[in-house]
Length: 192
Image (cartoon, rainbow, N blue to C red; front, side):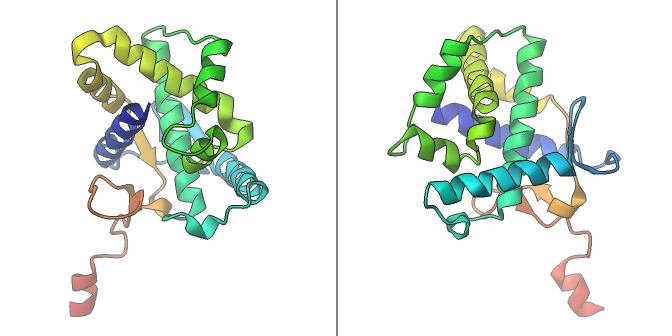
């Protein structure tokens, strides 16, 4: 399951850089393929996620990125996953979603695993369905499954609102997003 999340994160970052030139729809936090993720959806999901962290006695300051960015990344990845599943007609049963949601991953509990992936209980089934679908699709692709999954995932266009920056593709640099440079580079500002 972790390899799928890593593959999805890497793919999302690569696609975001190529998708930055397209126009952003008004009021959108992101546009993923043919799906618009509204700012109100992002705000609602962010509030739900913060509440879930508090119920689990976790502090949002422990995250390495702003909560809204972590939630937006999850929303973008899930939307792209759903479109990829539809493209290949991948069906996921409710029992398969249940099994995925019970997996603690690298954490002490399934709940912590979900929270570590910016998933609130209200969004758990969508997330579980997407992760299960990606795993099934990788298996369907066979021997070259992981690379083909990355390639297919990369083929879904993503445009993120410039307010958040660009999805980070540099694994050495912390954070899910980097400044899009809309105010110029630091060196250019110092010279001006």
